[in-house]
Image: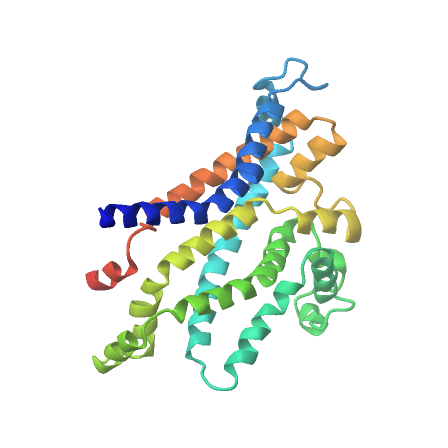
Length: 300
């Protein structure tokens, strides 16, 4: 009887702890999605019939396919770079002990504070041959004017560079924190068995933080798929029109606020949501996200 009562109280306490999150989830995720589905089926000036015609309108828009290509290429550069560099620098940071460890961890957070319009301004001066501290290096490869760097062919690399440096620092510190959860006795046992630094990093540490890296990949992929700030600000301030409707989120913004087609804009947003859910579930289940990392070590 006491066991059943204790189990019931544990379930009640667990539900009460989960309840605030559930309320926020319903208010700011479920309800907006339901409203978006409703709006995406409404009639518009462009599509008087409404319904799935709004989705068809987006797919037939001449800007849709180029935006898909741009975002896809951007993700192909951005995601592997984030995953490899963040994992590598986190492992290196974990090997640094003593008084320099804290200043180094704080240094990684500084670039993350430079976002939005400030990031655009900073990177403009970093890449503009006239003002850049790398001007001599740019001159060696023939980049002497802003158009040599800021052109449509380089936008994917420029945006990948911007988003990487504004987001990598946070994730390096987070992954460093995940490395601190590894028991010291496990690392000591590996060293006693003759494992060198590389073997400890690749065979012990990486498998144990594997789930954290997968979690990072899902969130970074979601953010990259929705890239908006960098191309929008660059196109509307520094170089007008250079990246107009470059990304899918920009196209959604144009449809909603410049094209007076809220139905199509909402339809595009929902399409992005579905694609992101499919990609996230694929990554989670293909990588056995819910398996214990220790099992991976035993297999090795």
